[in-house]
Every structure is written in C-alpha cells, then in structure tokens.
View 1 (tube, rainbow, N blue to C red):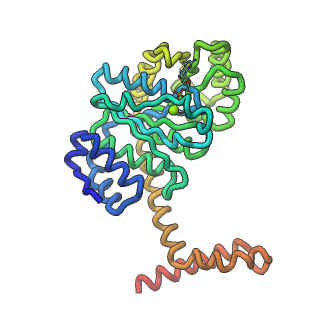
View 2 (view 1 turned 90 degrees about the vertical axis):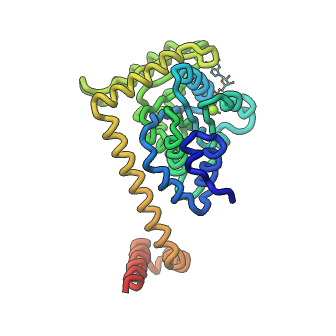
View 3 (view 1 turned 120 degrees about the vertical axis):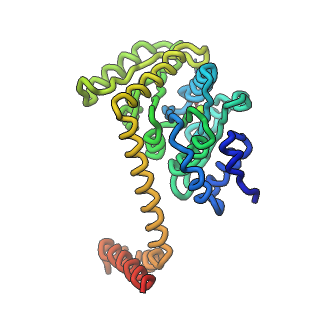
Length: 321
Ligand SMILES: Nc1nc2c(ncn2[C@@H]2O[C@H](COP(=O)(O)OP(=O)(O)OP(=O)(O)O)[C@@H](O)[C@H]2O)c(=O)[nH]1
Ligand SMILES: [Mg+2]
C-alpha cells in the first residue's frame, strides 16, 4: 500500500488527493491518522449540497457551476455520492451527464463515491472525503446526492448551502415534500425550464414555502428557473449561493451551523466506537444466542437488551481492574 504524502495533498496534487480519498473510503489502516493530520488544515472550504430526484439535472447544473466559479478564480471539488444507486440505474444510466471532461481542468476535482452500505454510513465517508478536499485547499466543495433517502438528507445537512433541484413535471414537488427536501432547501432550482409547466412549478413551490415557519429575520428560499444544459439561469444560482453564504456569515448562522455539524459528527464517532466495542465484546453473541428465546416469548426484547448492556458494563469493569 502506497504511503500518503500529506505535503502533496496540501499542494492540491490530484493523484495524492484521490489516493487519500480511496484510503479513507476503503477504511485502510492509518485512515484515522491521515484525517487527524489534516484536521488542522480544514475549515476554509465552503460546502454546497446539490440534491434532488434522479435525472433532474444535478450534474449538468454542477458542471455549469464549476465553470462559473472557475471564472471567478475559485477551485472546486465535487463529490457525487452513490451515483450508481438503483434509482439512476438501467435505462437512465446512459443519459447521465459525464463529468470526466471537466475533471481534467486545473483546480477542479471530481470524485464519485459509491459508499452505500459501508460501515460508518454514507454520510460519514463523504464528510471525511470533504475534509481531505478542504485541507487540499479547494475553495468550494459540492456534494451531489440523489434526494431519495435519509442518508442523502444527512449529506445535505453536511453542507453550508443546500440546493434542491426539481423539474417541471407535476408530482415532483409533492414527492420532494414527502422526502423531506422542502425543509432542508436553502433555495430551489426548477431545472429543465425549457419544458412546459416550469412557471407553474415555480409558483407551486413558492406557495408551499409560505407554510414554512418563518419570521422577518428568516432566510426566504428563492425559487430559480434554469435550463442547465443551455447555461440559462446558472448565473442566478451561483449568485444565490454567494448571497446565502453572506447571509449565514453576517447573521452568525454559519458558525452555529458548523458547530452543530461538528457536534453531530462527534456524536456519530463516539456512538460508532462504543457500539462496535459493545457488539465485539460479547454483545453480538448474546444477541444471536437469545433471539430465538425472544421469538419464543421466554424473554422480552427489553430484558435481553438490558442483559446485553449489562454484559458490556461487566466487560468494562473487568477491563479496568
Ligand atoms: N431539457 C433539458 N434537459 C436537461 C437540462 N439539464 C439537464 N438535462 C438533461 O437531463 C439528463 C439528466 O441530467 P443529469 O445532469 O445527468 O441529471 P442528474 O440529476 O445529475 O442525474 P442523476 O445523477 O442520474 O440523478 C441529461 O440528459 C441532461 O442532458 C435542461 O435544463 N433541460
Ligand atoms: Mg448526476
């Protein structure tokens, strides 16, 4: 296994950055140490989440945003989370926008992570990867996720600004609401604005937004119509990101959000560490050994859970004395 050169990462060397991400993605030895070393160099990047239903044009929009920010002299890294999910598989696959051409540009890094089902969850690995990109000095980090499940919502929460991309087709907004996307959106994009019904979709989202809790100090999410493949409306989207960033900074909300995020991450790390110890120290055996007793009503699930926790307490006591 090749060693990871921290200096090269800090110098934005793409190969080293890519290797480091593979390292943490695969959970190789030294992954935690690598993240530890890089930790003091993180915190400068601005994170943008782009989420929405399959095929809405998230990648197309992201490519245009990369070009926009590059013109402004910014470097951009993109993490496409789980692009091979069943939702985009099959026939739709050939339709998906390939991001590879742009990824060869200087100051642009694009990476896909198919991390579904891996230990530590989908969001954990993507957040770790973004630490590497942050330390490498990318000004903007974009997470592209398909907004269909809880883990995608988690990733959206990991961003400073979250954009929800929808299309004019009716039913899309209702689906988005059900999936909880309405709550996490800092603003909306109705892409494929060249299709019929775009104006109605914009109006429908604006109506729905009125039911969101708000006061005069609340950020009011904009609804922007785009035709990403024709680069229409992209300028407005980029400016809205910057406007939201400024809003978060001037109101002090950015610091609050980031602190909350750090707290959640820490909770996750601690819970993960305790749980894996609990299961490894005999908890898993107890569970597997007694589950049929729960099925046979000889013991309640609550009593078995208590037994498992107690056995872990015993393990800790023995370890300390
Ligand atoms: N008509 C029209 N088509 C678009 C527009 N933007 C993107 N497309 C097309 O829609 C298809 C899907 O675009 P992608 O950018 O791959 O969509 P995505 O949301 O990233 O898709 P997944 O990552 O697979 O969920 C592609 O064929 C695009 O060319 C648009 O504004 N109008
Ligand atoms: Mg995509």
